[in-house]
Image (cartoon, rainbow, N blue to C red):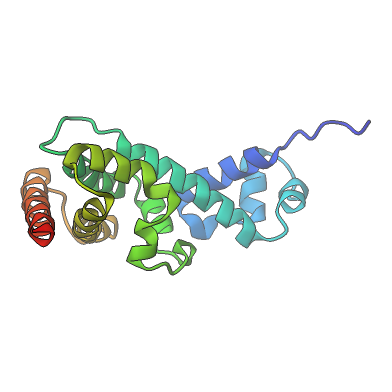
Length: 190
């Protein structure tokens, strides 16, 4: 029986995730991951045929981390959507390297906004919003799209150090966008 591997695939993914988080996804490579794990590059290259494969695995881990972050609403808001929108912006502030990896890299997959909204990974977020807003999922998706685009704009500017974060102003503007999107969605139903 061969000896048990000391470096697991999960350990390699975790190391790549940490590198993306601390230094940016562009620094994920076999040498940096091996250095972080205190091993040679052999286990890394054995587990992943290419660095691109490793980056995709780290991307999926970062995506899961982001989804959990969004759903952890720290203080009650006037709506779940507002809380999630603010968390999206806070994520860009607290985790700028992961934000850029998730939303400003080629690993986003070139999906359209509609494809992203229909993605399985977004289901928990949309379900929480649907419980809060009521109505059918189509209405929730329309409101989500507006809030997402608004929050993404703020988050992108902040993650790239182009705008100072002022939570009160952003919260006020996000609330206005939310109320407007909700009113427009209700209007379309009539």
